[in-house]
Length: 337
Image (cartoon, rainbow, N blue to C red):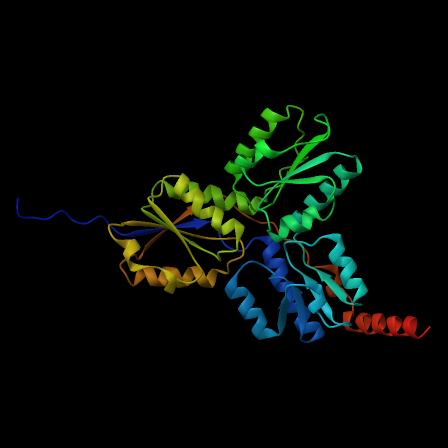
């Protein structure tokens, strides 16, 4: 017996469910495809429709043009606003440039915008928990700039001041880490005991479900691979949640070829998930890559059923090319008048 070596532990992959596309992303991506089908290219999209490199490249090939600012869209064109939402000033800019618009803002982001407007109208100070510079935060802040203060994580709480401690409410970006957000809220409540919470949780169901699934498998995984782009807030959070749940190592990759073979040293269990803007074809690519290296056994770690869907933006039921032409004509007539 003494000469026998111990058999190495079986190699397996724990595949998280739910993962990948959420209802808001699905709706936004289909909206771009449908707009191109209906109205022909180009369809201009302000900012990345969703934060995923592959999705953006695929839509570009189909005829979408991504721009950073409304001013880059030629007058009289069709422009789509991304799933992250935009501030009211952007709608204004689009009207001034006589653009026909399609609003693909996720309905869950729209809910936060409406909360911001409602609390601002009631003269509350709004503490918006989120990441500085993120498109969603810029859009929400723009709804009530005089009433909103950004709180970027628990360590930012010390700097927060309000006008009246009895009229303070917190809202949040929809794609944050649930745990870190609640840590921030607890700190804010210590500082402002009368702080009001939003009527319903702002962190979206998909972000929460993906984090719960990662927590479930993180403790059992030597390595967690999250498929997603670096500018995708919810994907970056999944890496943090995996490490917090006990995974020895966790990495974010856009594509299978970005995985470093060295990460597999001494690894028998790999956890795999993807952010809410990631099509499953990219996850399949990683599963293939792992199978080629002996990780053929795949177990599904299921933590929730997702059946939520959102109807497409109403603008896809109109003739926007005609509307854009009419806006241009009206603008021309006004200039001539």
